Image 1 (cartoon, helix red, strand yellow):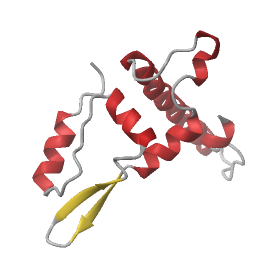
Image 2: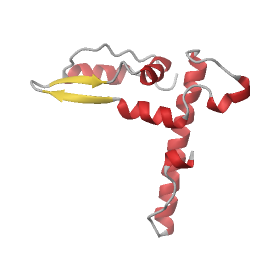
Image 3: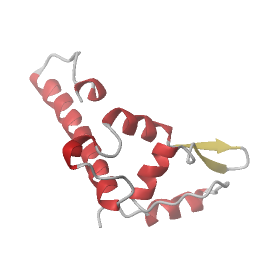
Image 4: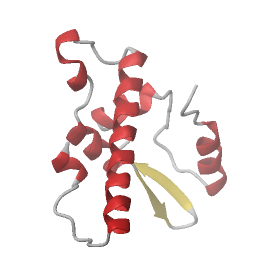
Length: 121
């Protein structure tokens, strides 16, 4: 995980900045584990008791999948989600019960999607 979270090298010197950097890395690690646990509990991925920590998507694949989840602004105040058909991203979204049809959205449509997402159930 050290490579994915980029805890090193540290380009900060003061104790306060080092502590803040490591805190952000730990928060990122916890978020990755929450997503992995949700994927496991959703039943969308097979559970391998011998490889519990690597079940679902590993940290690198999960990071790549989440980086693909972007919204593109088109002319006329229309928006579209990018790469929602990516298999890894679809697995993450399905684990949280998020369904995003491939269509154009207005700002109000994006807000309704955002408010409809329940992270902690």
